[in-house]
Image 1: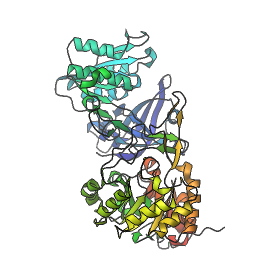
Image 2 (image 1 turned 60 degrees about the horizontal axis):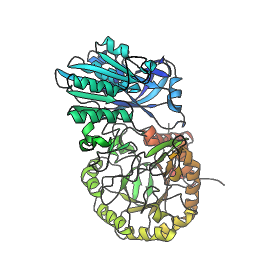
Image 3 (image 1 turned 180 degrees about the horizontal axis):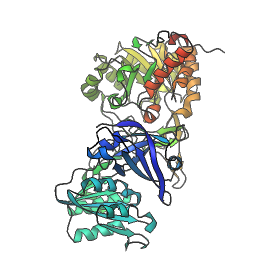
Image 4 (image 1 turned 180 degrees about the vertical axis):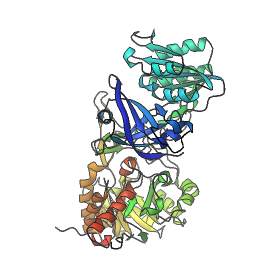
Length: 278
Length: 306
């Protein structure tokens, strides 16, 4: 559980889609220790406004030492974050330029569990929820047969398709307005995929209602499912206890997204016996 | 280059190597921060509030950011005093830093029993009595807003422990000095002030409160001027040492509290933003003293000129 607080140089911070930014940070130690599904906490301002760090999933890693060839960490090596400038913190972050520095803490939390050798994995993403799957696919595409199911409101919000194409990972898309791929929700694609042969594991990241719907389908079909959660959090390291999420209805108490997650098993969150209520 | 300034202070019978303690509820059980700083270099560590039995805490959402601050309604989630003594305390004992156990109960008896349990532990230097949490229905601030109730619970705990007893005061009261005096008279060795200020935030799009608990406790730089004023009033009212808490984010903030009369400070919300905050503040105090040719931090405590 190595984690580092690093003053990381911004190598690139560019708008890749309207209001969506790709932030490349020089952070060799975090890149070396990161596992897919983990996150970092970034300080978006040096002042007290906004006060708290912001959590971002690790979108990708780069650099030679990530692959164990350059333990000294020379040259460019670090992490990539993909974020939407929606609030005060992310807007300030989006104004930062290459050459400036930001304070990053990570890697944090529990990422996606290991895939079985030669297994079939479905990655189900909604909107910005695609962010951690680029890192996941990059690490796992050799050991598992991965397919991406991507849902978005419209074609502009269907991100990262070229990244998956570059890795040879097939992708199917659904948009709510039908402007790209199938017209409908990503869960429609998941239902179709199940009908043509269930995968060994489903990994989901996106809005909470989507995660619930994906988990419900998987629990019904008896397919292993992991969901990546989001929650407001102050510390990211398990001490503020702000990011509580209720255990499944027959359980007691709460998990903490930062320490028990952000990736959690569907059966720990949603009770299979209460699918109708989901 | 002259010798480094002396930073040691004493709170009750707790000798602190420097005047910086971590504030309860913002530093977990201490160990979570060991990747970021040497826990041995802290003045003291106040751990998350402990109750007799494990407590699950409040439903989410529990926190919301506000202007230069945050509201929380965690609801004192904790692992319970037994699990703390069995699992956390032995690991904390490896560091030489004094450990202050923050405790709370929903009844006077619960407070007394938690104190009694901790009194047996060698690794505990002091007990901080939380009579000021705004986020639990029973206990907490119910004891902290009324001088008579504060005195009763302080006395009940005093009877159960010989360890340094620190009473943590609530700002959610008309006259903090009255509560301070009541706690001092009832046997407190020291006081800490302040806990969070009760506050609220509304999501206008849903017309709902942003916290499931509706209200929460405000912390962070936003509350520092209020905390400083209340620490100043408390220090003028009592003779026991006071630990100043509330929005301290840097060494200058800490020095303000020391000059206002606090013997030590506690660093809270700043730990969330900068996990090394408490140590950075201790180092910053030392550097400021050296720059100003002040040999002993005790020379600035209460040095306010009015």
